[in-house]
Amino acid sequence: MATGLAALVGIQYENIVHAKCDSSDVELSMAETTRRSVYFGYEARLRKFSPPEKLFAYFASAGTSKEPCMIPLDLMRAAVPVFQPIHSTDARSGSLAGEPKHQKTKRAKTNEFFSLFDIDKNGLIDFPEFVFFITLLSIPEEDVKVAFMMFDTDDSGTLDRQEFKAVMSVMRQGSRVGRASSGLRPGLLSHGKIEDGGLVEHFFGKKGTDLLTFDKFNAFLKRLHNEMVLLEFEHYDYLGSGFMCHKDFALSLIASGDVAEIPKYLQRVNTLPEFGGPGVSFKEFEQVTKLRPKLSAMHTALSAYGNVNGKITKHHFIRAAKKICQVDLTAVQVDIMYHVFDLDGDGSLDPDEFFNMMSKRNPDKSRKGNSESDSSSVFNCVQSCWENRHLMEDQFSSKISEDSS
Image 1: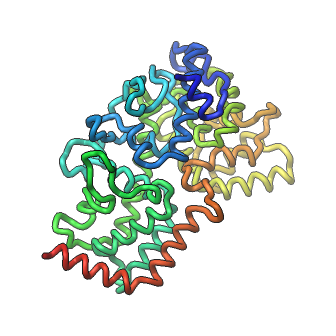
Image 2: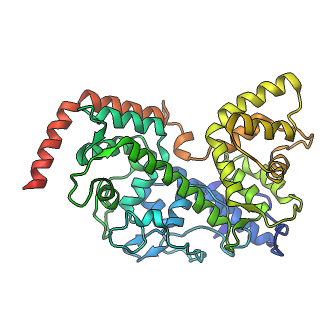
C-alpha cells in the first residue's frame, strides 16, 4: 500500500523523525517514518486536487459508511496540512472506503464554537457545513468584505438571509473546493444545500428574519480561524499535556510548504537537538500563527536588512517579529526556526526560503488557476453579480414568495 501511494504522489522522503522526541522516549522505526511521509504527501495532493466529496469522505471519522460526518479535528485536518504527532501511532489522518483503517482518531473535547451551529446536537459536521467552513477559511477577509458591501443594496449595513446566500454563492465560486462542489452529495443520504443549515440559522434565527451585520460576520470569521489554530495545537498535543513537543513544532512550521521542498527540511527536523522543558505552549504556538499573515512585511524588512548588513541573526529576527508583526517569539522557538531553515548552518536566515515555506498555509490562497488567482476570481464573481444585481433581486423576490407559500 505504501509503495503504491509513493508512486502515485511521486514523493520519496527521508526519515521524518527517526529520533527521540525531546519530551519523550518515543522513537519511530524507519518503516514507520516512511509510511508517515508517504501518507503526508498523499493527503497534500488530496487537499489540493481532489473534489470536495472525496476530501470529505477521506477525513471524516464519524457517522456511518452511507452518511459520514466530521468532528472538528477532522475539519482542521482537511483544511490544514499536518504531520502525525510524534506520540501518535497513526500513520495518516483518514482513509477512503475499502482502505484499511489505519487511524485511531483522537477524539477532541466538546467544542463550544462548533456546537453553536449544531442543530441536532450530535457534535458532528455534515458535508454542506464542511464546504461552507472550507469556503470561509479559503477566502481573504478583504474579499468577503467587498462581497458583503456589494450585496448590501440598500446601504443598511446588514444582509438578510437571501442576500447572504448570494454572498456565499459568490464566495464558493472563488474557492477551489466550493467551486468544485455541486452542493449535494449524490448517492448519499445528505441532500442539504450548502447555503442552508445550522450556520444560516445561527445568523438569521429559526424564522430566517434576523439581519446580519458585517461586524458580526467578521467576528465569526476571526473566531473560526482562531478555532482552527486551537484544533491544530490539539492535534499535535496528542497526550493532552498542554504542550506540543519541539519536534512537532518544527514539523508544523514546514507542513504547509511546497511539497517538493519539504524533504530537505525534514532532514533538518530529524537532527533537531534536545531543548529541555515541556515543549511549546498554546500561547507560544499562537504567536507563530499571528506571524503568518504579516510575513510579507517581515520578509521585506529582513531582506532589506540582510542586503545592507549581511547576516540576519536570531536577535535581528526576534526584533523584527516584535517591531513589525507585534509577535513575541521565545528564544527556543527561534532556535528551532533557525535549525530548520538555516540550511547552510552559517547562523543566518534566508528570508526567501523562510517566507516561501511559511506563507503557503492555505492551498486555495497559493494555488493559481489558468490565468488568475482564486482571490481575483472572487473579485470577478462579485463584479459580475453586481452588474446583474437587479436580475438577482428579482430572483430573491421569487424565492421569498416560494418560501412563504
